[in-house]
Length: 212
Image (cartoon, rainbow, N blue to C red):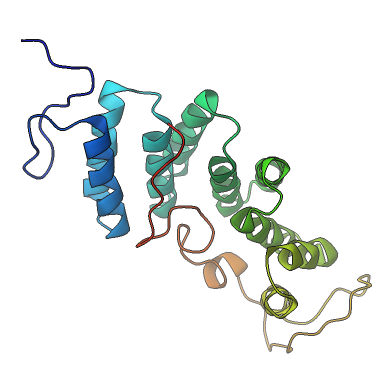
């Protein structure tokens, strides 16, 4: 008897023979929330074996690849997902952050701005954009992005971590954060986990994708 297109053969952990794509996606999401990266990858890959352009599975695999610093793999999955849905702010923001991790700043800015064109209040995109401007030394734009993302207190704290010696001499913004004795690496300190504060699939709070 021919199987339904939605039915997948075997899975990593005692799957039902009638597991659907939705079932396997849920499995992958649970593994991802628990930090079980290899099991999550296996589940999402099973979906791609049936539907290579599945937006959510490609997005999840891209985020996992970012965590593991496998950036060419991450980019391939992001771009596959974007070819299907290029109007998903979470996806655009995450790709922008991926490029930020790679120091591909112009591409990072492009995708973060695109995310914000679609959803101007997208907090993670705003935080990622603030981090981008901090890494490229643009104090005013950095502070402006963080102000849009949250409170003034939070914005000042974030900008202080990126500009520990205060604003550059050309800045017109007053520095309200505490001075720090040495420079820091923003990516390593402020947003250390590429899926914790800066991407849209944080451990323990996996979003079931509306796209895909």
